[in-house]
Length: 108
Image 1 (cartoon, rainbow, N blue to C red):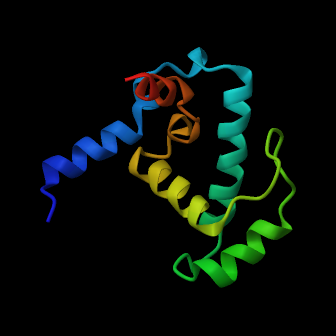
Image 2 (cartoon, helix red, strand yellow; image 1 turned 90 degrees about the vertical axis):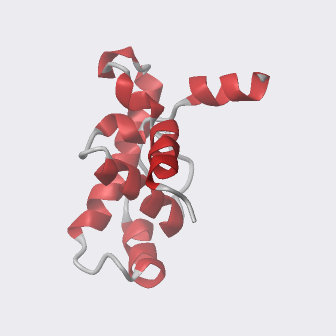
Image 3 (tube, rainbow, N blue to C red; image 1 turned 90 degrees about the horizontal axis):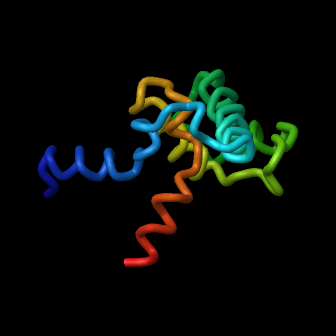
C-alpha cells in the first residue's frame, strides 16, 4: 500500500507544468492543451461520469477534432486528463504536454 507522501510525489511528478508560467509554452503545446480541455469539458458536462466506455465513447466520437489532434482519444485517456485537470484546480497547464521533462528523463 502506498503512503500519502508517495502519492503526492507521483502527482507532483506527473504535473510538472503547473510550476511553469502559462506564457512559457509554445503555441503548438497550448493548442494541444486547449484541445484536451474541450474533451474534458464535454465529459464534465455529462451528468453520469462513471459510465465511461458506453457514454463517453459516444460523446467523444461526436466531437470535432481539435486543432493539432489526428484522432479522438480513448475514454480512458480523457479520464486521465480529467483527473489531472481536477486535481490541479481546473488549471489548463495540467493538460499541456510536458515534452521537455519527458525528453530529459530519456537521457538519463
